[in-house]
Length: 236
Image (cartoon, rainbow, N blue to C red; front, top):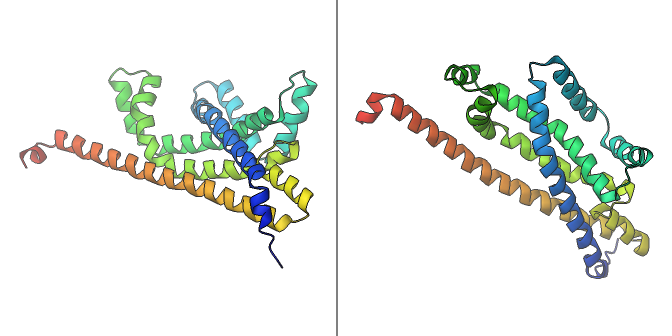
């Protein structure tokens, strides 16, 4: 099979526009899904049964149904209720809702991994539940959840390709248009495969560096805490 290299050069601008749209969609979805995922995680731990039921239902629905079905629901149901949004905005909202359910479970797992005595000790000092969670539990949760958060972020990048089904002009849609004009699907899709790989590899590299930085800070913090608490360490 002969590879037509001219497609890489002639259609590169069109593909890079789709690549830029993919980046914007993923960044927007992460900005929305991270805080909402935190709210869902805390809601699932709430003492109020109604809050627990609502947050758990949301998480389970979005984790246990195909993302493409969720996209269609947002795209076709929202206009039915009078909310008309551009396809790209619908894609961001759908991807954020999908991501928030997974981020919520990652955060909840990280919170549960912190020793229960930490929360009880914070409460004993007079802290409210919110302050204890904010200043004591969540900082200890970050190094625990970063690897899983990285995996979920990479998953969001890959899932964004589904948005081509609702005419969002992201990277996969750009490749579909290119192969429709050139009848050369191999060149078009091998190029976007390399772009997806480059984007995810960049994200993974950044997150690995962040993990090392957070872990080193956490370890140094524990070491200084031991030094303050143990007189023998001070004497050394």
